Length: 140
Ligand code: GDP
Image 1: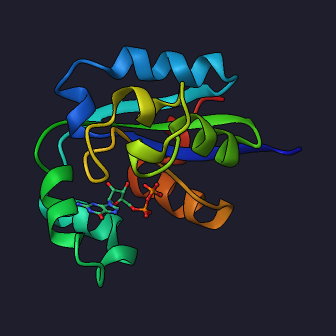
Image 2: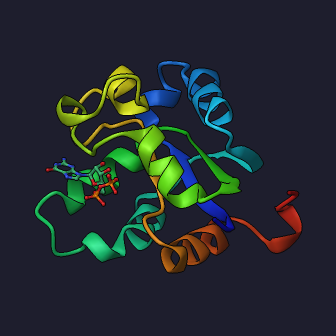
């Protein structure tokens, strides 16, 4: 399997509960390398652009408000099959359906406030990484 890079976001519900280190430990234990990371606060407009693909969904406004409600940690994870591996470590969108031991099973509060984001395909990973990071900031 090829080495891939994926965009991860530790969401406001997790940063507010001081869970950045515990979540990063899950990534590293799974063999994912954090090759770039920064803590930022998104505006609602920035969150809206990032989640533009969900614009027509009923929860879009709530999602953008939530993502702008506190600091997030944006990061690039690298590893063999990193996109699928990260989705596995994250667990299902709804924490009630997330497998035991996954980040969302352990930490997420609800289907909306679910602690982490992860890219879902190589094309979206490339777009999402370039939304937050310049190439010079990625140190593999
Ligand atoms: P993901 O790829 O597992 O993050 O899931 P999706 O791409 O389907 O949804 C993106 C994000 O929108 C999720 O991670 C949630 O934060 C949010 N979301 C999804 N479904 C719902 C919902 O029914 N209600 C609310 N409030 N937020 C949702």
